[in-house]
Amino acid sequence: MTACFGQAVSEFGKYQIVEKADGSEVQVSELLEMARESAFDALLKGVQGDDFTRFYVGWLQLNGMGETDFDDVTKFTRVGLNVNITDIFAKKLLIRNGKSQHLATAEEHVGANQLVGMNPGDILIEQVHRAILLYKAEDRGNLLNQLKRIHAEDITAPFWRLLASLKELLPANDDLKQVQGLLANGDDLRQSCKNYDENKQEQLSFDF
Image 1 (cartoon, helix red, strand yellow):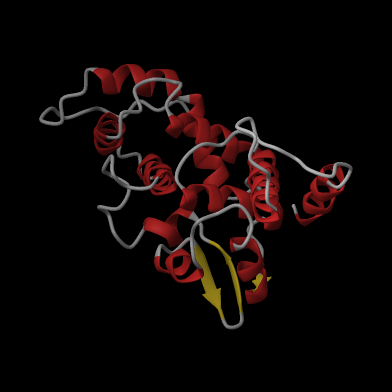
Image 2 (tube, one colour):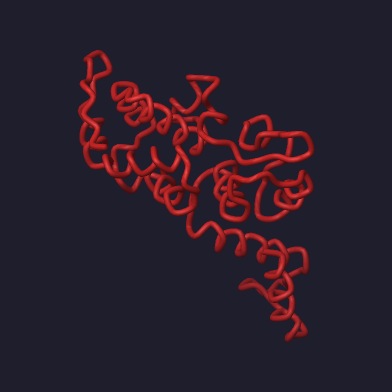
């Protein structure tokens, strides 16, 4: 992403003045912001969502799930995101281990609070991680309830797009196994949650 800055500056540097559509001059600070956003969007490959979710996917893309130095967090949050380090750790997206940290698994992220990820106002990665844990626990009733509450009845919902991205990026771990299961059962889950009544008991029928 940093390399994109030099390339962007070299393109703008070919011209004495670079103007916007309204005739005003493009400032260097604006150029760098444009380069930063474009580079990060390219890295995320079209992943939409809140900045915390974008952080999670971007970090996974660059660093995987392994341990990294604390300085890497500072560098990362300067590029393409409007989040700070304190909030990232408060949200348990990164797990500290002495002077290093690693990206949180679903259990590390939301496992301690069963309410996180169940509501439409929760950040997208929280919703996906909650679904991963519910699927792992074979808790079909609560999973359907969650999908209905977060409006994931349609395949075009951000929830399913994020699952598809995680399938391509996660290493061979338990989270990947659950993501693959959710996607494999996606048609059934989407159809079932459209008519789901939380007052009725659902029978488990996942296709593993």
